[in-house]
Image 1 (cartoon, rainbow, N blue to C red):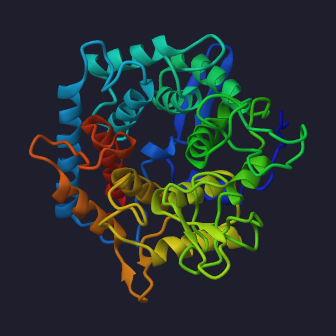
Image 2 (cartoon, rainbow, N blue to C red; image 1 turned 60 degrees about the vertical axis):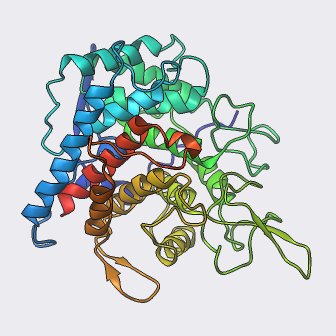
Image 3 (cartoon, rainbow, N blue to C red; image 1 turned 135 degrees about the vertical axis):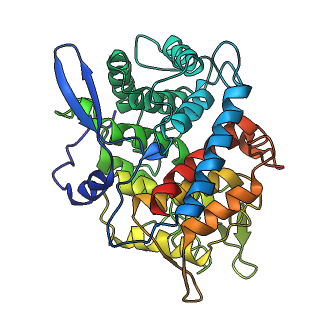
Length: 406
């Protein structure tokens, strides 16, 4: 396996995130209370005086949309406590994160329905740390551990710690042992470390490990963050840092990301003169790459970070998932809200030089897309986005990110 290295000596960028995050306190028997940054999918930012004039009226509209979305989720919950599908607890974990992230903490005193959902996730936990039912082990474990960590319930701390230990062992090492000699090394896949890694599963693992690291102050069960960066950059269309033959030389792709080394969900292009095949960058996975760099503590001025930010600015749209149409559209909006909020970007400079209040624009877009019953759903079913429970969870969390900055 790839052994972990302690890369926490450079805490400057992590400190920025921690300063704006509301501390979460967890305690367990024999262990003093630990201060943990909230999971990024439910971060609530402190108001910053002088930075913005709060739009109270619009903030009320956004809160109303959040409340309607959560009311829909309460009404659509299965009697056994889960949402959508019994054998994929990650969907229930995402729904719970949406409730926990309410800007007024309205569900802090959990109603019985949420207790049932947490019990379902707790019942999905295995003694070895995995939290799953049938498949997609790492994906389910990461998201469910995040939800349990955010519950502020000391009873869940042992489960989260075991999940951390499991996740710390899932980084891929396909070449020579302990050497970063494969582009897949350092990433995480859906199930175990003997399969290939992909950027989305890597993101979910990094996010959970990053925001629960106070439970492991000595780093005994930490990830190898250096190896994670190795994998992330090998998913980026950036010839200066990624020498794989599929890397696009086209300006339209430069800085963006693909799903995994050698595969893009947005397809490929072939040079008619040379026959060279290059992979296209696309929206969701480029925000996933940006967030992964943030969690791995890459400096904001690093050329890999500035390159993906430039691609995202040049390809900004609220009409579609760039290069993917409506496929994965709501996940794209969710990751946009999460990434730009985490980086404290208040105005987004677009390719025409204008500066956009992206929070207002994205919130307005989601308000207009909300259904009469309070849900959101995608007409395109790719990646389960025809499931209103999943998409409503994505959308509510996006609005919860936006709300404090209005």
